[in-house]
Image (spheres, rainbow, N blue to C red):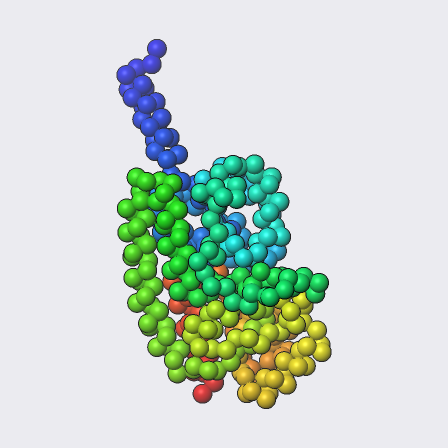
Length: 303
Ligand SMILES: [Zn+2]
């Protein structure tokens, strides 16, 4: 026989279990989407992020644990512009979760409502172009992050009506904070407007457009195609002709290649974390703050 205290304990544990399971289980494919989902969902959601901040989001190493997470998820947030197509599609098929079927309310395509850049007029993957649906790196623009945050708040609120007001309040707070920071970031980078930056991969054009820094010269000849000597020679002449002195690299890219180009052009190599969580940048706003300030510092050091 159980004592009344034991019965109470068992029922309390049962209740705790119910409360814990009431949290929406949210899976985000990449840490930028995860950071925005975290800002909106707060402690009302149980959030998992699949790709590591230091990993190439085009080629994520799929782990068996991903299948478990996707099988149990109520919500999946993915970019929706083919960024994760290569590794995510088989995982979703394997997870056998009807909540994540295309068209289900829990399946979120973050690119909905975003004006994608570089959408090709004809589909052509013959040269290995991994941006066949347009440039998928739209989260590098804070204004796009606000659009995605509103989208996520809508979805979470419809699936978990009890917490809808909380999601709405979190969205308001996130947007207000981001708007304040955006004004500050624009001011920090304004003195350098128009100065081009070379990047390894075509990852930062949305960031560059927002802050008026042309970022459309790449060490890769095409997205996903490794640099060739002939292409690098062209980049070096363009950098010399345009007096371009900054090269951005991400954690999984070949820094030595960037250093070689810098050696021929007197440029600085700057490490850009691809995602929040990459280097002391846990939140979306911390990450963007880091990108803006390190860029401004690098330009300032060249004066
Ligand atoms: Zn890409």
